[in-house]
View (cartoon, each protein chain N blue to C red):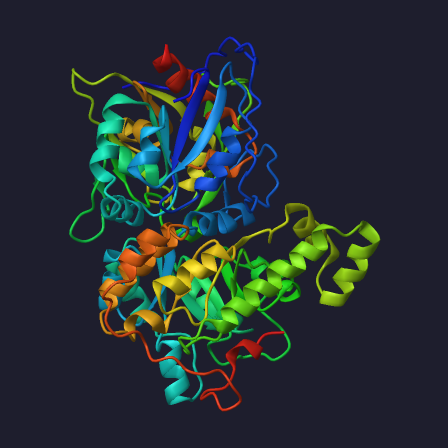
Length: 334
Length: 233
């Protein structure tokens, strides 16, 4: 059995001859947002491990599932995580009524059935639903506009939880307000349950365009801009410096095909959530696998063509107008 | 494989590959380090060494199979240096516990048994200062970020395998707070293995935590200097 040699090793001489390896297209990476000072003990649930899990999900697909059997199909199809909920958004639209956190027993069955991370949704502002999910050991919580809001003024204070949160956003101000409340992961809101990608595109483009504007502003302009978009100055400044959101950013709300997923990736998302699009389609396992491949090979139209072939019926899409059944969910959240 | 350069591939099927790319670009060694993202066999063929990043091991294995990369990756591992972090460490193991139902594909390469999510779910994820050796500046602890991290269960070295050396370990001072039932306090042998969080075997390297999520690039520097460059002489 080998053991760690703790005797001080001779300091390696820095053999610096030619280390300039700056690539011209260094990827923009959401950084760790925790203090890296020497600590003497372990630290559970730091912002670093919360945002770190989101970083591990990048380039992946998170799929909505309503039972353990669907969760297994998703895992076999290559999902990097599953989102447990009682009804997929398309059914919430159709059936109406108040949509709430799922039965903890159903969530536990899903946790037992799969080895990948399990997420679950709580209503906006419903911190007790979040406490319940944290106590059963869920991996991530989505404080989601898809469920009926429990509070029309306040979101959950997400800093006070060990479990990390993902939240939806339609623009930069909303994204940064959620991060300031402790969200470690952001997704576009899109318009859930419609199979129509147009709102997700609108939201991602809005975020990107505001980041581009901020990135060329001087400090005075950033103060005014932070006031305009109602976001904390320090986060606006950090976003402008990084030229991207300071946490991982996925697409969600209306993604139904491999091409939709690749579109969102090319627009700059780090990965995608697919809700009703999979289990409301003709062949869920095949479509799920195709979307997983599309997110990896989003820049390769040849592979996208291959995986898009012969997937069977896509979910029926809805036009997003004032007559949309179930209303526009993206307007929920403040 | 450009003369005077060392080309390090990052398997970019799913997970935190961009962070490794950024980290290697900060490493300063006697050769120029070129980093490429690997999604196809053609990209793999350019590489002198490979990093399998953190992500979901089941997703990465499935995407490798669907992309026709499983056998090319196994051939690569037989010949060239590979570093696996977290999910990548699982893929580099010869056997795994806590695999998904029906089992999951591994690449092998290091003679160990590893347990997925060995510390528990996300709420048990943690940061801890690690004892390190053979890195530059080894007196300075390294902040290990453990996210649903795997745990080494046994070292299964046979006489034909290269020996395994431990490069980083969770210090005993942090264990009492860390362990609940995870470590068997009475079984010293198993504890010695389970607290090893970075190991090297021959040209291969494994970390169960995420050096790429910190701004301390000593592990990236170690991999290039100790595992990759000696293979290129």
